[in-house]
Image (cartoon, rainbow, N blue to C red; front, side, top):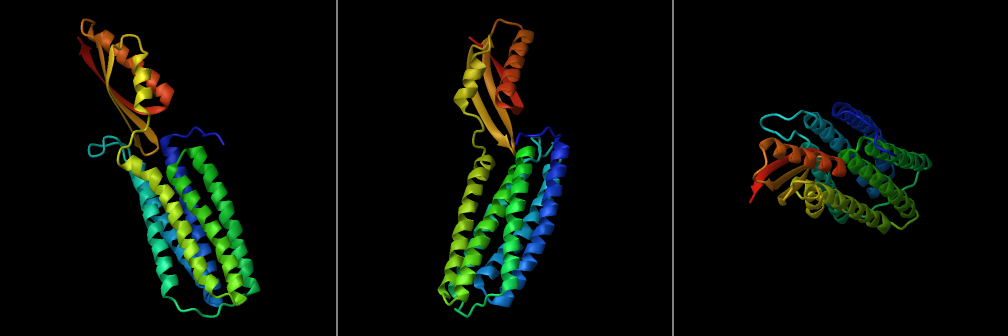
Length: 290
């Protein structure tokens, strides 16, 4: 699906709406899993319910952070507040790690006990699975339309919920048949899957938070050097500000030309790079070339 044209305010408002809708959905899923888990005695289902509790907490955190991220640039944050969105992705990944460790500890420490299967419980868990798949697909589509990293991260999280639910249902049914050890094994499997999802989110968030480059420096150098009047490209820097790119360049021009001509060359470099690399924020410093 192609990205739609939204203003920054419209995008932020829509992201908050989607997060709020998913938050209500996660509350419903949490209640369904808790009811089935306590009724059947399945450790795997109760662990999945804890997972959903964390989902609700994530939605609350993300919604609050988005209210900060949408604020315009100010004296304290001259590049805006978009990195708060990336921080939320990092926090989401961190919470997933905590969840995975808690599930492992719970599975390791708990005593093996009988697990029962209830037809109505199975129907509810299948319903949860279908809802998770639907919500994940819906949220991923909106993430692409809005070009939102935080929605994409949450969609991946919801997809992990669906995969987890599949494991939980299979483990629960086999445990009810007498294979009690599978209940604990599934809990460990859920934890491993959650850790894998968290690792992917860390890979996306950490480079932005530590100002890893957003565009290959060689490509930026080549693009700037092509502009007539640019004698040398002396410094190239780029970084992510949330989901947008920022670039800083130092170029050298003939020391004998006028200030206006130097400014015109810088403008041409700026326009070329913004168009070629979809850059939103660019700063160019001009030095004399001797």
